[in-house]
Length: 64
Image: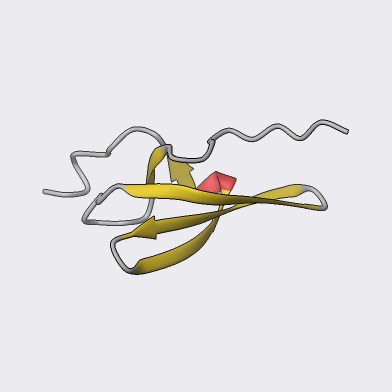
């Protein structure tokens, strides 16, 4: 069985809704029925996000 994900381990991503647009590192990828969940790390913080919440490009307008 093959699982594909948009982002891989160590990729730097941004939360689309984060007004600071700080980068997060992908540290874990979980596959659930019909969805991909990423565990992200930024310093000592962790966050779980769905694929649809993430982008690999910083939105500069949100951080102004």
